Length: 274
Image (cartoon, rainbow, N blue to C red):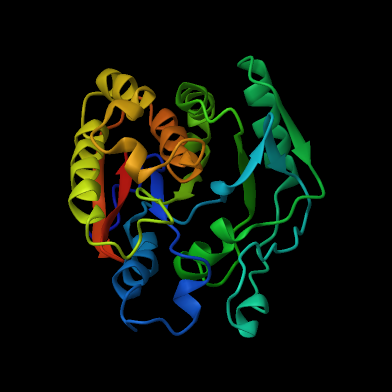
């Protein structure tokens, strides 16, 4: 992805970004440079935007509900939903404000589209939100609402929900899907999964770069991709579904791969639309 900002009149893109493993960017790791390239990508990606977003809608892999839910508190607390990491990683801060009015708009838009949704004033920001945003927008001064996944894990349902919210991009609202293009906890660090992750990543890239209609068809049927269920085991595809949401929000805009790296012997990528 070029570091030069796009045309100032352009609508906001949509992003699918990897958020790493727990608080990986803020702790020692072995090998020590394992997450450096991903961190550098996240630190520099904001420079590619046409302008500073007025707000962010963040779809995180770490929140599933029986309906689409939206954080609506004015100042959501952080949820340290990772386990077994160093004590200091439970003291990380990211005091970004919420956006109650935007949350209401998101719920209304989804509801108008016939998609069941509700606001949640008690839900905080999970690490799928604050870990990557600490790198992308470290000043934490852009309002954020976080949107849940639907626990049906139905890809078409997420494509349609994203499509209904695509008009937010014309209001300078940045829509981000936070997950991982490869997420099999038992496979990380196993070299046998390298070729499997490569084949799936190649398929995913071709799907993203297809025409909008073909992209929708392919992503709705992602389980047919080579190695799909080795990369995202059954009922554990929550880290891939944010991609469906942002692909839906992309509308007719073209998609492309903007980052890829070898992480713990597997390939992990990021994608942008618009």
